[in-house]
Image (tube, rainbow, N blue to C red; front, side, top):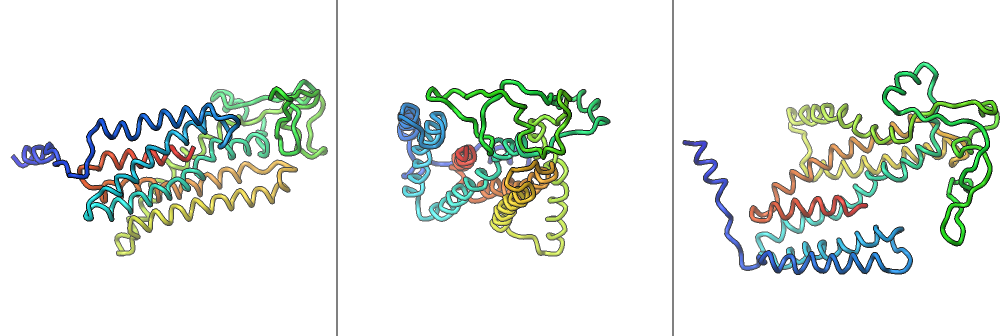
Length: 307
């Protein structure tokens, strides 16, 4: 009976409030303006945020983000304070995800051009079975023309200019460390860097949980907002790891050790484990019951908005 009672209570639909909008009005305030704004971002001459697709996405997301501000302005006195707190967390989350998702952009570029990815001969066979070995031959061929920072030179039609030179990987290797002419070098594929964060998540999740459990037993566990703050702070520290990598390789003039990337991902992962689950928990705790799903959607909107 107790179980049936529980499900009966869960099935109760929360009553609407005077400030709530109909589904049609919500779609009219979000979907239609988002499509129009996204189209404008796509056709704008030039780029505001780097590419047409990025312009379209960010401009299209603005009406939806504005809708959440409208919810706050129309909310009752009782709901306004928790909604304001949630929107503040959403805004801060943009900064976190902007740093975190560098693993798909800046950190991948660093792994490709500025990291020593050469592997020993004994590791080639097992890594080949996993399909993560890249073989580069030290001989001249047609390659993109780049500057010292590996930026590709383009012509008037935005096509990459080609030159006859050695593969770009060897561009910032000291002459005394270069292989012999025609020798093939085995490298770890750049894409393997995308697996470092999941590896740290699996490894560090039990550690972080155990650490907070240890603090809880001693009544010293930080509150959810403080955990989010620590997550942001630790994530910021990850950028200092890459500052160290930049100094170690003389601003890209030489290749840096793979350990810098592994360490950076490790620090970012600790920040992620402190912030992301805590923010989801905060949404469940603070959002008015009838708006929980909507605010959870808002969290994921601001989550992807960092792109």
